[in-house]
Each structure stands twice: as C-alpha cells, then as structure tokens.
Length: 410
Image 1 (cartoon, rainbow, N blue to C red):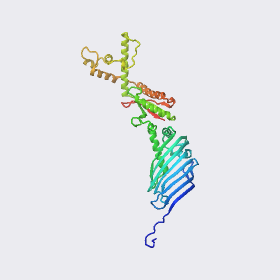
Image 2 (cartoon, rainbow, N blue to C red):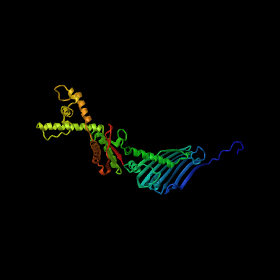
Image 3 (cartoon, one colour):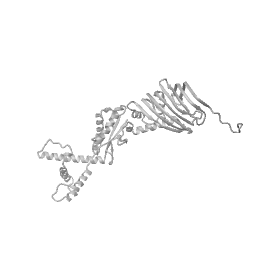
Image 4 (cartoon, rainbow, N blue to C red):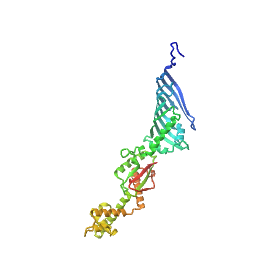
C-alpha cells in the first residue's frame, strides 16, 4: 500500500551485526545410497558478521567444527543467505576424514568399496546469479580399494590401475576437480558434476599412464609406451636406456604396478635389415673359409661387420652374385677382364639380392621376442622383480613403420 507521501513502502530490511555460533551441529545424510551416507559435524563455533537482507549485502562467515572429534572442519567466506542462489563465496576445508565413511559413494560410482584411507578436502565454491563455479582439491592418503561391488552406475574404467598410477611416493593422491553449473538447470547435481569430473581425470590417467607417473619423454610426450630399436636390431640404444632408467625408478616407487611388454617387427624395414645381416654373415663366413685355406688364424671367428673391408665385401659379394645369378645383366655390362662389381653395377646387384632374400615369419617373430626380452633384461638389471614383468605375444605388422617394443602398465 502507498504511504502518506503516496510512494510504495520499501521492503522491510533485516540487519544483524554479529551472529555467534557456539557448539552447533550440522548433519548431512544421503538416503539415495544403500547403505546411506551420514556425516555429522559437531562443535561448530564461530561468527557470521554483517548479516543483512539487503540485495547487495555480503555476510562474513568464519566457523569451525569437527567430524567425530578427529577431523577438523573450517568454513570461511561470504554469503547472502536471504537471497538463496544469488551470491556465495565459501571455502570449506575438511582434514583427516576417514574415507571408509564414503565407501557407499565409491561402491556406487567406482564399483569398489574403500578398505582404507584418509582425505583432506579443500573446496572453494563461488555462486553468483545462480551460476556455480567450484574448485575441489582432494588429497587422498593411502587410499586402498576393497571388495568389488556390482553397480549399474559404476564407470567402466580400470579404477584400481588409476589409483596405483596417481599415488605418489608419500602414498598420497592429489586431484583437482573444477566444476561449473547452473542452478536453474533441471539436471543440475553437485554429485553428478563431481562424478563427471572424476571420470575425466581417471580417463586421462589410464589413457596416458606413463604421463601419470611422471614419465614424460621426448619433450613432454607420452611416448614412454614404446621403446625404439634400429631396423633388424634388438640392441638398446643409449637414449632408450635412459628412458628405461626413468621407468625403472617409477616402477620401484610403485610396487603395485606391473609392466607388460609386446615386441614388434615390421615385414618391411626389419625384413630388409635382417636380409642385409644374413647376407653379411654369409660373406663373413666365406672370408673365414679363405683365411683357413690360406693357413691363417684357423680359430678366428668373424664377429661383425668389421671383419670385412669394403674391398672384401664387394669381391666376395661378386663371387656370390655370379653363383646365384650367372646370367644377370650386370655381368654383360662389366668391362672385359673385370670380375668384381663396383659402382652402380654393385648397387644394382646388391639391391636385387636383398629384394629376393627370403626372410621368414619365424625370423621376424624371433626378432620381436628378442626386443621384448632385451627390455625385460634391462629393467631386471635395474632392480625390477621379474615377476612384475610380463612378455606378451609378439606383433608382426607390414610396412616400414616404427620398429619398437610396446609397453603397458597394469
């Protein structure tokens, strides 16, 4: 109604200078879970200052309490409780919370009960015009998952692997879960937003496991999941040994992790390199026979490419090529009196021999197996228990792609 001056009366304003809280309590219960979750905060003590119903008012909050007398709780920040959903800027901290009390949540959304663990929760929630922005920093100490629980809402991700990957040297897992939402959204749910954020973190961890354990290689990539080899070789190079050194350190710090190794071989690059190796060995054997027939060191055994000089290689190869391809075009093009191929004729003949050289699937499988075994042997030398390392069946692929051994964590 209009006042004496004819103007509408203003809404009645309420202002309270200070509101003291002494030995208060707050109960949180989620009856949607079976069994339900109930958290009781006791001994709430503090003050709310400048409490007012004015639209632009911001009351200062500073309250402390505890859960079960062992888990301190602090609430601080600013609110306007008279205009729900309009404004809030609150920090809520929980210390030393027993995670077993939250086991129904983990059973429902992760598919595992919590057998052991504590948590420190640092939550910062900002609400303005019914729009929520929140930062949730969660630190789990010695989180241990218990029995498996069948739940239709459980995420289909390797949760136990994620826990092992995220756990640090001190047994703690530090997770940041930022969330946002609109209170006017019919589907708005704090639990739903947190679950979605947690699934995102776990998905990232298990899809890039080596990054999760700090194994960032090649300028920050997640290529620690593969170890490179030269074509046709199973010997570890210096750079790959350095990467395995880091992996060995990470594995020794996380005894709950196991490593799987899958050796691979390529029918293109590896087969070509193996053909070259086998050809060279055949020529080295021919050189050894020459030495024996000439009365040289009969006990000398060719051990590698250094046995043959370039001249010996071309001479012995030419003899081999004449026996294998007596009517080849290279012989007709060779100057009269020459018996050793050189230059383009040598390269042409050598290319033909390597192209026709037969490399079997067994040869490729042995190479792939040797690569996996080389990685395992190196890690065992670095102190990783052999029982934690599994060699998977080899993978043979066509083409000229990377020649590697694949690593995975479990």
